[in-house]
Amino acid sequence: MDISYRDRRLEKLGNDSGHAIRKLGPVQAKKLRRRLDDLGAASNLEEMRHLPGRCHELTGDMAGVFSLDLEHPMRLLFIPQDDPPPTKHDGGLDWQAVEAVEIIAIEDTHG
Image (cartoon, rainbow, N blue to C red):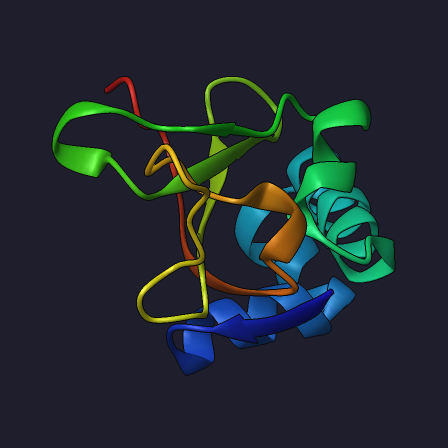
């Protein structure tokens, strides 16, 4: 899957392990690297459902945003790059058609 980043700060965290360790700590940086590697290796978003990290779509005011667990309580947040995102006949997101995502944040969504 193709991965892009909302801003340079996130891109540096995603692409520079030393920087990620300094900013996030070694455990969080390792989880981030693992999740980004999984995203990059997946051919589409559907494959992420079966990998560690509990990939799921958020609800409420964050509907349309996806979350992957990092070290509790932090989450890797991303959106499909397609605008509008691909949908099924019932109106739900077609996870198999999502082949590119944009990383938008690393944060605690419950805080």
